[in-house]
Image (cartoon, one colour):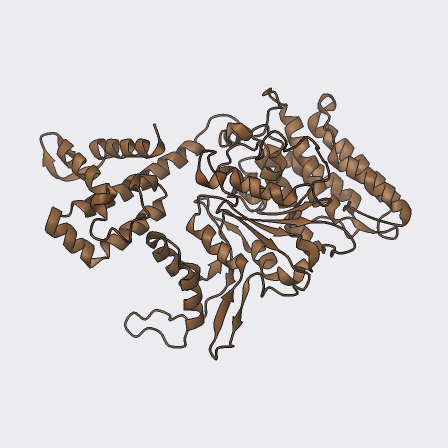
Length: 532
């Protein structure tokens, strides 16, 4: 059974057994079979939208739309349209209105109970999380990428040229679609956008946009980054990937300043949504609308919103227009930014401000047989829940995963003790990301053969990876800042800490220890860094 038919059958069951009639019969207040069939019939697009079919031609079936706010937006547009109401009452005594109202109630109830189902697992916290992960990516080599993205939707992929950094971002975007869909087969899926960073970028005008007065009046010229924002807002159930190719060809702190600031304003809410401050604030006229007393946006901002939503379906454009006008344009929860970086004499190094806000993964390993037997990466189908996190800070996971978090904190304290008195000591932001990464990695608790892994090993593996991403990536300098002693003591703390977590029998093959060995070897020249 396809998803459309399944939703239709669920709606039919809802109408027959749950929805209430305003009139009592000998069988109670439940809707009678004829009413059920009528509501089902009038929800079909050829009946529901027959008054203006050209406007709604993008909707093939209402049963394809299962996100509550999207369904409610459609209902709002219809029920506020006098032409629709007149047509419905005159021709069919309000059956269209009744069908869309019932469908809104059904979708909201369905969303609630499905969400409750995901929350109501028995067992340990790691079992709860594990059930939310799609099985076909469970043992994938892409686990660190997926976990890092869910922990923080800003990822740096570093490595030598030609290792496939930008390609893997495209393939992660492709993996969000079923293999037999047009988007999966497309050269560029709609949820992927690559932006080539230029060496002359010293502010955000080329990326985000700028206000121009060339025409004599203020006009906002939107950049590719901002345009992609709008696309992600239109489809919040799908992860959207923006790839900044060769990100450090220009100083990141300069052209990406707004994003770096706004990403730290992320706030998690009880309903699972994450919001941020606006990256573009609305501007209003000094006088309000005389009839509605509402704020009136300045013409340049109103035109910008209209431009960004020009291709947006009407049922979504209505709500997004209101959101952008009232609240500004903020970062959508499903937007993932990935920067690819090469470290050589043509590029800029990263400041601690950038590194503190990003997850970092090195891609220096080369498999010469890779990509020869299959055109696309064997990632498997990725769901929204696997890539888009709802937790932002340590406090968002600590109560549910106290034991796991305390293990991570014990390890982190030992590492931080070694860093005491150096500029590399970590603080609360890194602490939070350690906890999120450890928790988000829990579902991946089987080996390549499907055998269960010891929980201690799973936690230790995650701590090792996040240590490389968030601690080692910040360590650089000459021998006055970085000493052999510091690197040796850090290696001992990491090695002993990982053994304590995993147990002597389940020792992790540590990428952090390997990296520290590499960094110590480079220090012979008088300078060392994380970057190869």
